[in-house]
Length: 313
Image 1 (cartoon, rainbow, N blue to C red):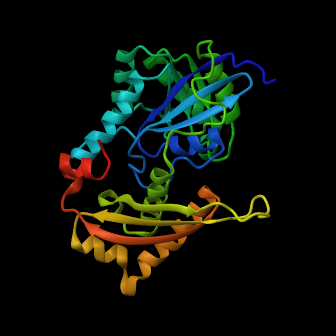
Image 2 (cartoon, rainbow, N blue to C red; image 1 turned 180 degrees about the vertical axis):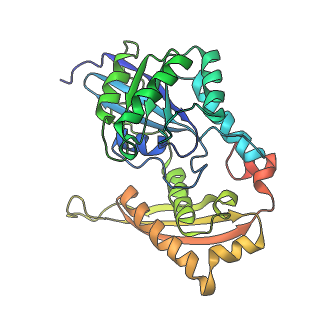
């Protein structure tokens, strides 16, 4: 009989773009739930990752990076992030250290701190990427932020190196209320497989295409056929089994962007599809037939109806 879960609740990962929130979510859950790239605004929606242990359950909510919002898509992403603060028990404010001799909060993080002051939610300062700076940088930075906000805890980590991540989980759990699990013990995320598939495809666009292309890109899964997914009898555990047929559309805003994603003689689209298929097969545990096409939806990121059509609502 499994021990009773003593504590449970929700914790939001909040911060500026590219501070490592999605990498941290993936490390906490042990699964790739959020796509990761070096480009800002990679995460566009809230992503739930549930970690269940005998001693408790934490539902982590990854959010888009909070930035100066210009355009409908950017405003949507910032609204998603700020709304998450109101919906959780605990906030993890993720920052990255800078090698500057005199640390500063900066206007972006100051805006977030002002929003957190209004929320009155218990908040941790999570200093990520500590492997990138000398340790001597951290103490002045911690002192600076402690003067700005009454943090419940300060936890330095390196999500990429898995340094301090387990300690962070334990401290988060200690600050959550006593209670039964919110989600079933075997639940990892509320993201549907089709949503994850679309994100894995978008990740490869981010990876392979020019700087200006990813921000104008969205992906929708048009067809997801699982009729041949069941593995054949006697298939060894851990082997890909069965077949899933997927068709998806990559949306851009201009014909010139479509030409770049397709590439010369279709080579870029083929590369995107090949790499996306490998990731999707690992996700689904089955062979995948993936068909991609590129469509133009003019100015979709600037129009409310365009956002709604492509799933941002």
